[in-house]
Length: 239
Length: 272
Image 1 (cartoon, each protein chain N blue to C red):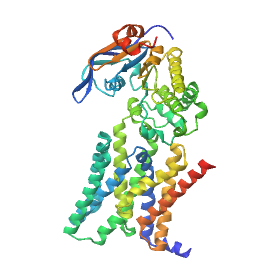
Image 2 (cartoon, chains in turn blue, brown):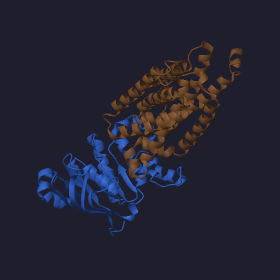
Image 3 (cartoon, rainbow over the protein chains, first blue to last red):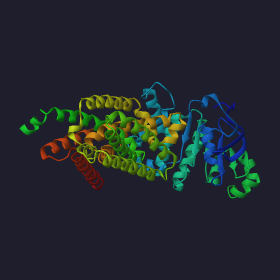
Image 4 (cartoon, rainbow over the protein chains, first blue to last red):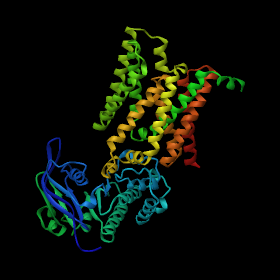
C-alpha cells in the first residue's frame, strides 16, 4: 500500500437525528484510507446513527458528508448488528457470503464466475472456507461474525464499517475478531470504522477515536484521546 | 384407480388442479421470505381483508375479483408499512385489521343476502369456484411470480437475510418488500376462492416451515417448499374428491401431516 492518503469520508459540521430531533450536532471529522477509527460513547449518543449517515442511509439534518468516488454505489463493507431472525436462518455460508456482491449493480441478476471465486478467496482469508457448505444457523457466534465479515469484504473496496462486531462473542472469539480486523487494516490497507463498547481492546488497534457524548464530542488520534479528559475517564486502564 | 381416472373427466376438477397447483407453487415461493422475515401474519390478515372485499362486492352485485384485487393490494401495502414502522405493535395492528375486515364482511352479508352458499364458499373454499377467467388469471399471475422470483432470487435472499446490509449496499429494500407483498396479495385473492379465506394463509406458511425443518440452504428450502406445496395440494384435492371432504381443509390437513413428518425427520436426524 502506498502511503498517499486520500480522504474517504469527510464530515463537515454534521448534525444527525430523527424526525427533527438532533442526537449529535456539529460533528466534523475526516476518515482517510488506512485509518482505523473507533466510535465510542454512551448508549443513545448516536453512534449507530452516525454509521448510518456514513453509509448514506440517513441524510444529515445539517452539514455535509462528502464521500470519495470509490465509495459510491455502495462499495462499503458493512457489518450490522445481528438480528434475531438471522440466528435460525436456513442458508449456507456460501450463499451468505455471495450476497455481498449485490452492491446495487443493475441489469445483472446472477453472480459471475469471478465473483464466485472472489467469494471463496474472502472465505479463505477469514478462515471460514471449510464451513462453505455448512448452515449459517449451526455456526458459533464467532464463526457467524467471520462469515458476515467475509460478506462485507465482498462488498468493500476500501472501507469496512462495523457495528459492535464483538458484542455477544466470548473473549477468545473477540480476540480473534480484533486480530483479523487488524490484519485487514494493516496488510490489506482497508480503512476500518467500528462502533464498540469494548474500549480497552479497541484502543489497542485504533489509530483514531471518535467519542460521541450527549452534548459534546471528541475526535483525534488514539494518543490524543488517551491524553484528553474523555480518555482518562473511559480508557484509563487501557495503557 | 378408475375412480381417479374418472376424476379427471370433470372439467371443473381439471380447472381446480391447474389453478391450485399454480397458486400453491406461488404461495410456497413467496412464503419462504415471508416466514423468514416474520411476516407470516400478513398472509392471514390479507385473506380476511379479501373476504371482506368479496362479501361487499357480492352484496353490491359487482364481480368479485376486480373489486377485491385492488382492495387487497392496498391492504398489503398498508400492512407492510405497519410491520416496518413498529415492530412492537405490528402483530396487534394486523390482528385488528383482519378482524375488522372480517366483521365488515359478515355484517354486510347478513344485512343483504344472508349467509348464502357463495359466502360459505368464500370462507371455507369451494372446488366449484374456478371458472375460465380464474384459470387465465392464475396462469398469468403465477408466470409473473415465477419470473420475478427467479430474476430477483439473489436480491430477495439478501433482503430476507439482512435488510440493513442490503440497504447499505444499495439494494432498494423498500421496492422489493413492496413487490413481495403485492404478489402475496394477488396469490391470496386467487387462492382464496378455492381454499377459503380462513385457510389460505396455511398455503403460504406450511411449506416454508416444513422445508426449513429438513434443509439447510436457502435454495434448497425454496425448491423443497415449492415441491411439498404442489404435492400436498394434489394429494389433498384427490383425497377431498375420494372422501367427499372440503378441498381447502383437506389440503391444510395434508400440509399439516407433511409438516409433522418433517419435524419427525429432523428430530431423528439430530439424534442419529
